[in-house]
Image (cartoon, rainbow, N blue to C red):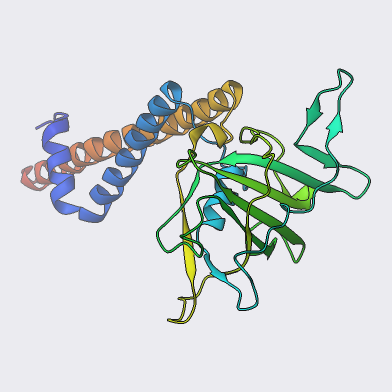
Length: 278
């Protein structure tokens, strides 16, 4: 009696008799299909760069986590200028540039239009136009160590979806690519309130406000076309390897049952052979 290769029957028997092996096979197959789907998605969509740990969305999102509470000795009627900035520089055509980087002291001074809005609970609800000044450390914004970052947020009438942010910080802390648009310089002095940024719940005696941040996709650093092609190729290579392993496991499981039956039948045939007397 001879054994025939019956792959469907053999695989069914293997699955019923070896649940751990079947589970391992399904895990590999699921992982391979997942990588194929990811490669297809990566091929048709632009993806953010995971190696970029900081961009302006990152900075603004970190800033929006704080409560801005008015300091006890701060006066809402105080009228001062924005964050101390260097004198506006002029280019070769005589145009004034508001955004500038002072290389001599390695400090960056920027005046940007950012997607931040003030939520109810403003420390100066009676004022139509005002600004909030505060000082943070780079670590509070998840940018670095103990370097000082000076911030001024200007809230102007007719600009409900964006806020003018003046920031002064060491140049190496701030991402200088994909900058938010420049905020027009204000020609009038507006009341400025000194606030303290805290991530603790305010007390009843404190006047605090919070910021609402809307993620801006144009400020996210994306992968280049070449980088995406490399990622897609690697995903496909891993998927092919996993599918190859799955195929080998299937062939091994189907052949093992056939060989087992053949040896079993061979043993039975030998036992059933009549004894020959000498």
